[in-house]
Amino acid sequence: MSMEGLFELCVTVMLKAVGLTVVGQLASRLCKDAGESALSYGVELASKIAVLGAAMPLMSKLFEFLGDIMSI
Image 1: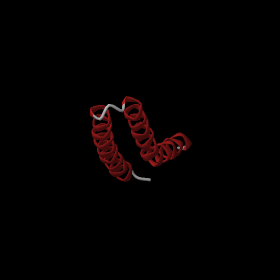
Image 2 (image 1 turned 90 degrees about the vertical axis):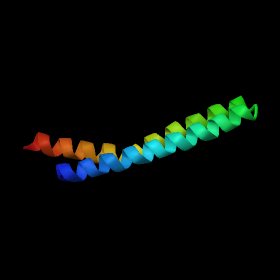
Image 3 (image 1 turned 135 degrees about the horizontal axis):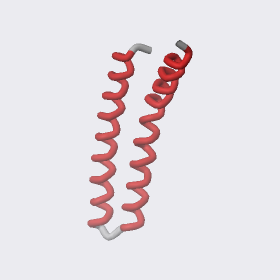
Image 4 (image 1 turned 180 degrees about the vertical axis):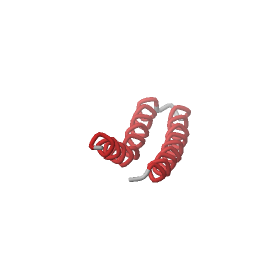
Protein backbone atom coordinates (compact mmCIF):
# COMPACT_ATOMS: atom_id res chain seq x y z
CA MET A 1 0.00 0.00 0.00
CA SER A 2 1.33 3.41 -0.92
CA MET A 3 1.68 6.31 1.45
CA GLU A 4 -1.09 8.18 -0.40
CA GLY A 5 -3.50 5.28 0.09
CA LEU A 6 -2.69 5.18 3.78
CA PHE A 7 -3.24 8.94 4.07
CA GLU A 8 -6.65 8.68 2.34
CA LEU A 9 -7.64 5.87 4.69
CA CYS A 10 -6.54 7.97 7.70
CA VAL A 11 -8.69 10.90 6.56
CA THR A 12 -11.68 8.61 5.95
CA VAL A 13 -11.39 6.98 9.36
CA MET A 14 -10.94 10.34 11.06
CA LEU A 15 -14.10 11.72 9.44
CA LYS A 16 -16.04 8.62 10.45
CA ALA A 17 -14.73 8.90 14.00
CA VAL A 18 -15.73 12.55 14.24
CA GLY A 19 -19.22 11.76 12.94
CA LEU A 20 -19.67 8.86 15.33
CA THR A 21 -18.44 10.95 18.24
CA VAL A 22 -20.77 13.86 17.46
CA VAL A 23 -23.80 11.57 17.13
CA GLY A 24 -22.84 9.68 20.29
CA GLN A 25 -22.41 12.85 22.32
CA LEU A 26 -25.72 14.24 21.06
CA ALA A 27 -27.56 11.04 21.95
CA SER A 28 -25.83 10.89 25.32
CA ARG A 29 -26.83 14.44 26.20
CA LEU A 30 -30.41 13.78 25.13
CA CYS A 31 -30.48 10.78 27.46
CA LYS A 32 -29.04 12.85 30.32
CA ASP A 33 -31.62 15.58 29.73
CA ALA A 34 -34.35 12.94 29.90
CA GLY A 35 -33.02 11.79 33.27
CA GLU A 36 -31.56 8.51 32.02
CA SER A 37 -27.96 8.73 33.17
CA ALA A 38 -27.35 4.98 32.94
CA LEU A 39 -28.54 4.93 29.33
CA SER A 40 -26.37 7.97 28.66
CA TYR A 41 -23.31 6.08 29.88
CA GLY A 42 -24.24 3.12 27.68
CA VAL A 43 -24.59 5.35 24.63
CA GLU A 44 -21.19 6.94 25.30
CA LEU A 45 -19.60 3.52 25.66
CA ALA A 46 -21.22 2.27 22.46
CA SER A 47 -20.00 5.37 20.65
CA LYS A 48 -16.43 4.74 21.77
CA ILE A 49 -16.62 1.10 20.72
CA ALA A 50 -17.98 2.15 17.31
CA VAL A 51 -15.03 4.51 16.86
CA LEU A 52 -12.62 1.69 17.70
CA GLY A 53 -14.43 -0.56 15.23
CA ALA A 54 -14.17 2.08 12.51
CA ALA A 55 -10.41 2.35 13.15
CA MET A 56 -9.72 -1.39 12.76
CA PRO A 57 -9.14 -1.30 8.96
CA LEU A 58 -6.69 1.55 9.46
CA MET A 59 -4.78 -0.36 12.12
CA SER A 60 -4.62 -3.41 9.86
CA LYS A 61 -3.25 -1.39 6.93
CA LEU A 62 -0.84 0.44 9.19
CA PHE A 63 0.62 -2.82 10.53
CA GLU A 64 0.81 -4.14 6.96
CA PHE A 65 2.66 -0.98 5.91
CA LEU A 66 5.07 -1.25 8.84
CA GLY A 67 5.68 -4.90 7.98
CA ASP A 68 6.59 -3.90 4.42
CA ILE A 69 9.01 -1.30 5.74
CA MET A 70 10.62 -3.81 8.12
CA SER A 71 11.13 -6.36 5.33
CA ILE A 72 13.11 -3.91 3.19
